[in-house]
Length: 173
Image (cartoon, rainbow, N blue to C red; front, side, top):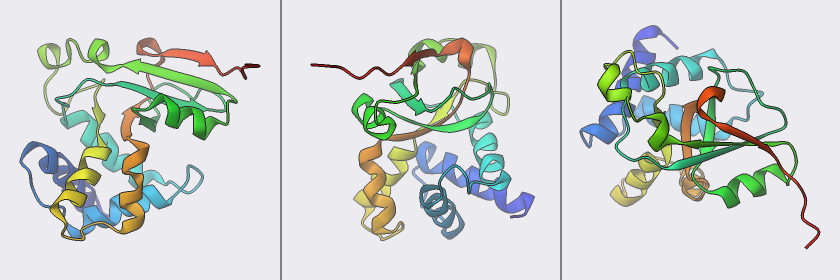
């Protein structure tokens, strides 16, 4: 993927939520590939696009987000989060760790101290794009991709200084 294509996809992702823009063909392919690919198959091009988006997009909502993982990764890694604790529990099979981020606290001063292109603590509500595609009914994303709406997916950098980490425990109840 060329630098120009990465920038165009990133700008389209931003414009979809900020300006109600249509989803371009390249962005549709990017989203579908992101959703179809597990963590072992995700390449640098995916992360380059999300890096541009996260540095330039300031979300308007402030949900609590969750991520489950076998081990807590390094700071700055771009990863998928969910807005549903039950979804994180199901994915984890109650093993490994759980990261929790209160985005309201995390983004408290982002707009005041940073400007677009320099945002450091933002996230991207991919679920909103999926909902928009479904509601537009234009077939812009595959039925497979639209099934991910229930995953309530967000893209965010892991920042352990602004997140809480816990170990899952199996309840005997």
